[in-house]
Length: 330
Length: 125
Image (tube, rainbow over all chains, first blue to last red):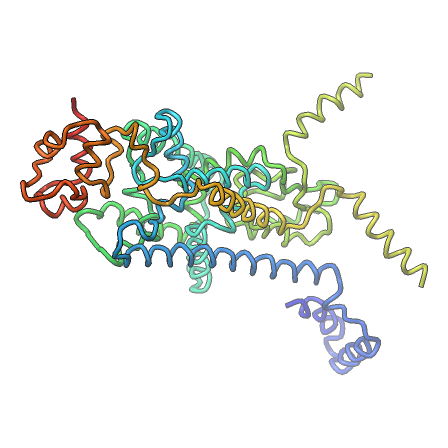
């Protein structure tokens, strides 16, 4: 792909002189000038490919680990030998946190110390580096990216949610989070586990122990989420994921943020195109905390040092503003 | 040659002035994944990593809500401070089932019994 960008102008200029164009290319080769590999645009393109390749590799690794664990758990003959995926989910830590604090160390059934440990790791990681967990680790996010890939491969249409409706629907994550926390605290059970599409799909009980009568609701919800996500990219992450809601709140305080330098931005809006969670990047100075840290926008920006991940938290801006205004007043 | 080297260095200096806080886009995911694995390793070394309910229940201060499928009739009795006979009677345990029978095994022996019903029945005063 990198070569196409730089060889295109030559046939365009010399449309009727193909031979001449060939001569130009041969001349460049003789001069040992490899434009295709060494120009900033080529480096951007190469980085883009590698960043996204690494991201998909990371997602595949975590999803495979969870699926392997689920298979082992379902096939285990000794009880407790292999943990269920309930024990390996940081959201279990969110659900059981109140119970642990209020009861002095007791957990909501099916949650364990591992859930709290994962939650601590996620909170610390998010406060430092934002929502990269969603883009690089979460197996359910990986599944949604896979569905988007399938849709693109099959040339199926994408449903673009209108901006105003999208803005309202994004609050759905906080509503889901609040309802789950309320139900979990009042019933002291993993209330959401019964219908959680991530648990239903990656727990693999539908494969090893299919029970329509007991789990019809979970199956229908999971199928509905998968079907919707096929047409609405990362639909569950954007509108319903309770863990995503919690990460988004924490992400507001993260040290690393993607920032746009308005002075050098030409407003081409290319950065808006690849965003899996459909954030507006081209007209903001700091990318929203709903960002999943996939870096597709940073890779897509054709201008050097315009859209960057920066070690510059937004709360630092608030601290600087009063100081700047004081200086002006002086 | 020297001029080339100067240009090369000045180009980097200019970039640095433009965005002093700019970092490699791969650093945030590496940090998130590294922190998660680091915390898991630290917890494991400190003996705090547990993925099984067998170690997450404090048997000295458990309530009926903490009854697990792996707990035996005797463990439930000890944990809740209720005599074994009372537990057996409330859960309709057959006489031939020993006190070492786990709650989840009772589900196969006692018709309609589930661990959640044990929590409800034994949770009532």
